[in-house]
Image (tube, rainbow, N blue to C red; front, side, top):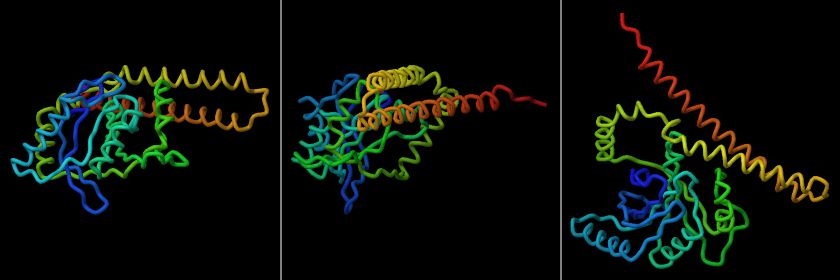
Length: 266
């Protein structure tokens, strides 16, 4: 909910939880008063002071959880760590390990109909993996360079979800309060700007690949050809993902239309 409230701006918060063997269990979170932009979010002095005060208040009311990580949003461009994110996570792991970084994409969550989330930890400074450990996901053209430079400096963690009895009660309360607006919401309208941006981004990627193929079509450079084929394959995946999400949203809207606007009373 916090990530969604930021709109196109990044937001940030801290994670409270515990360590159980090799598992990092997040029990709660709290937002930080930080100023985000459409490309980055940084914790300033005020945020660090707030974080320290919050942990003290939590102990005063006998909350047993400790701060075990931080989270921030990437509205519309996927779950991965930028250069600033990598530096932040490295510092946190250096001074208060174990520590985890979670990234949430609220825009893609709405578009896909499922939570778009990733949990990451960085490798020790100076270490670089031989290959990317991150599962493929569409990255906007203006973010690819930042993603590619740092993608071998961290690795993903498996993410699973659980609900406490209190979580269930809260979700039931939210559903009872907002079920009408939930059913009447159209993701095609809510995410119209995002969908348009995705189509434009795919078009730019295809144009870039086509331009490169035109320049190298007469050169015997098999390695470049393979890279270009890879770019085309990724662009095709992006096209498929965007189309599937749009079709699913349209089907959902048609089903609602059929159920609620074409009811015949006898």
